Image 1 (cartoon, rainbow, N blue to C red):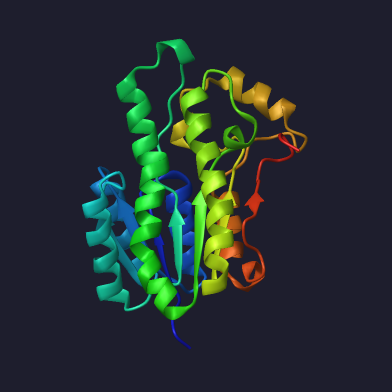
Image 2: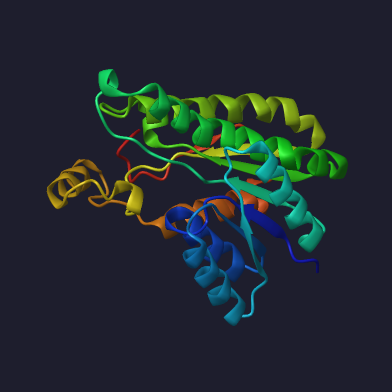
Length: 245
């Protein structure tokens, strides 16, 4: 049986790294994308290879269309086929809306929105040719509800949801599914700015009484990429412990 293949962007840490481990241990060949964290990506790939899995390290800044194109070419050259793309790379920003600079707005949209667009456009010729493929985008609960003092981040993640739904309609006839995962509060470095009191308050507000783990989000990604997600498209799955219902 042919080994399935996945490219995960922003996979050197957090949800991306957890997803790389989850996919690899489920028998997938995994391409681990990173931008700056080369040491982390290298350590992750070596870890997976020691366990006997197929793993490839690929560098690209997803905000750069040329780099993304070269990354996808590299993955296809090594894996010959790409079954699933997970658009996980993203950046966050917390602060008052009136204090945001034009450069901060541009960076948020360049990575979170344009980066997703670049990656999808780069893999589409291959997936359309095969009449098969799964694309999974990453949003956030703030992309669903909007977050105070996270207007820019919320705007980009809302755009990702709209893009996902539109592409699901456009690409469905080509046999390609497009779904989105919008996590709640997850124990990652991106939420490192939250102090213990803030995290405790968020856990208390969550019906399940705790914040989530990267591994729990990773399992949702794997579900969508597997047979369980075959008849799902244009959907937004929200692993958030009930914080947003």
